[in-house]
Image (cartoon, rainbow, N blue to C red; front, side, top):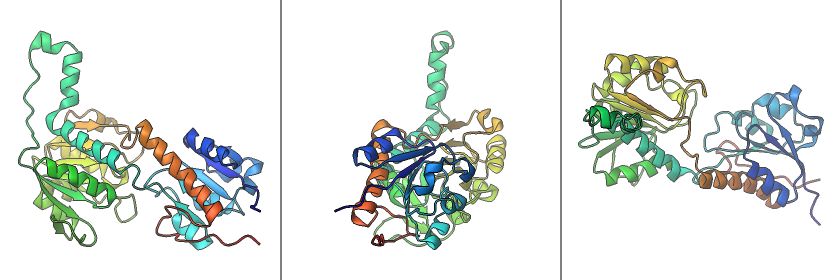
Amino acid sequence: MTDARPPILLLGPISPRVGERLAAAGFPTVRASTADPALLPAEAASVRGVAVHGAAPARLMQALPQLEIVASFGVGYDAVDAGHAAKSGIVVTHTPDVLNEEVADTAIALLLNTLRELPQAETWLRAGRWAKEGPYRLSPLTLRGRTVGLYGLGRIGMAIARRLEAFGVGIEYHTRSVRAGVPWRHHPTLLSLARSVDTLVVIVPGTAETRHSVDAEVLEALGATGVLVNVGRGSTVDEAALIDALSRGVIAGAGLDVFDDEPRVPEALIALPNVSLLPHVGSASVATRAAMADLVADNLVAWFDRGHALTPVPETPFARKAAG
């Protein structure tokens, strides 16, 4: 006989589909909008699993004495204290793979928007300026003849690289170690990569190591025709240095889906004419977000039914201890 289903805390703006899937599997749920332990409902004390979209800090885990698993909605889990979870025997899961293609599509779209000024051209048309003033200006930049550097070559980075191959551009990359089985040139440092390419696509997680790693020196190395695209984490780019570089023509343009203090975007960045800005929509399609929600729920079901999570993060490769 199986145990009664344990309660699951649904935390933050988690997709309603997660709760629907868990309810269909017989799990009772408790809801909270914030990770502040003081604001958790009384029922939260008995939860053994958390489904979260956003932050799950150590203080939250400490406030849940029966907690076994934190299932995070997203491939990046920098807002979840995986280090504390590892020390406490709590497994953390995320949602890799199911969003790779969507985010890679977004990266390519941002690159093309930035180079060819497609959003600006559409605005020109919608404002009636084509009919009144004539064609939109010739785009000063093109993808033709470019060499693209990938800062990060994980699952999403590989999906971006495959798309770039079809465009016939040069591809190089920087990761901490050489990735076996790929034909592209590896650079041991980000600065070396930036000096070698004219286009930099950032797809690394937000960590202490990567914070503001795309700094003034890296941007200057890209050169006056350089373009930056970021679909990883906003914290990776020094936004003040980027605004300065774009304003002074140190680089030619940038396409950004992520920002350092989301959803607050610096007005100085918004005001620039040589940027393409998106509100963190890299994986934001109905189909992909549904797949992510399913994986969150499937991780929780697998943990309590079979004792193993489907996609644990590397810090917490745990198996569930038998009850009693």
